[in-house]
Length: 416
Picture 1: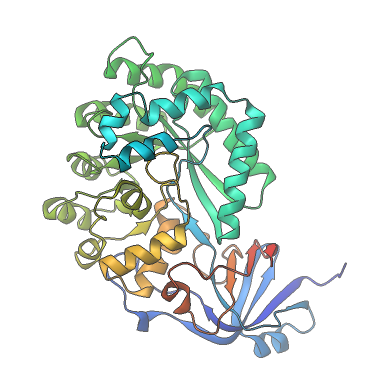
Picture 2: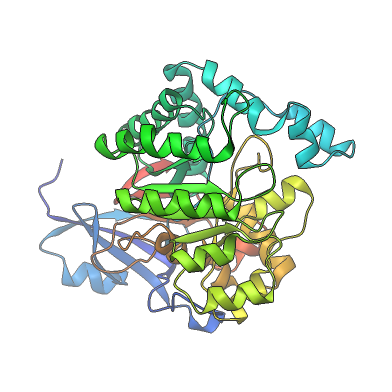
């Protein structure tokens, strides 16, 4: 145990700060700030200084100890996944088999698969089982460089079950390195055992669930799925306005299979609108003129065999763009954010700067987190190191190059 106030970590072959980049619009790789033979000074879990390693050692020599990095390494901010559904039990391998045999997402749901199948298994799971399953997925994400991840409820779809899921997310968040950002997605679909209408179900959530979520501080964010088989634009508008009046931030699943959600998102000024596989020019213009952040989900496109969201057009139109894994048991079971980002970049002709921005500071902004996603003074010291000398290798190797070191608040969270 040492008595020094600061810790200097380095030297890094390249240190990619992601600093001084705009939140909206396209990016060129020449805009990336790279420090060669760089280092980071950490104090109480936050970054105290970023610069050349030798200079930092000189400037902080009387107040620091050094955590040496012996091999070549490129360091970037810890990855941020702004959209996941990783708190569930059971398997949807049967859905996958049926999809390969030619059935589509809605047909599988109508035949007893889909979300209802996961709801049944998740309701039956114990709290201990759900904690273990969530921890397993969080550890996988951490190993792959994700230091902050959003986690939705939405796989119990009743009052006690949704509270159970949010409490599980909160407990794992308290006991693990990764920061989990909970979102209440009780408005995922109307469960098959609810006796009333779609509107009745949403009213039940507003009256019975959301006050408890707010009182117990289980989540600050509310999500709703707008689509065929889920909820209409009009139903969602009423629900979201009521949730907003209670004090929740709003996000929307939209434009995955049917249109309308983007217009509502811009009308209400929600934080983010997620999916966008079928978004068109009219909606893109609305997004560009708003502060709503588009979150695209390449994992869902890969899982369902459908087109990617128009990331290139969104960026060129002046939108921000965050990238989430959509890790879930049905449409996006892979859960590897870096692989998905690399593949999206190939097909949408995204620059390395745009791709990395989408899983660092732009993803942080989509979660209203102003203290991470960039390596700069005052920010949380979340960072990941790759065993290479060229930052371009991270995406050039299409996600197969994994971090050899992950730091969470300046402490090594994994080391291989």
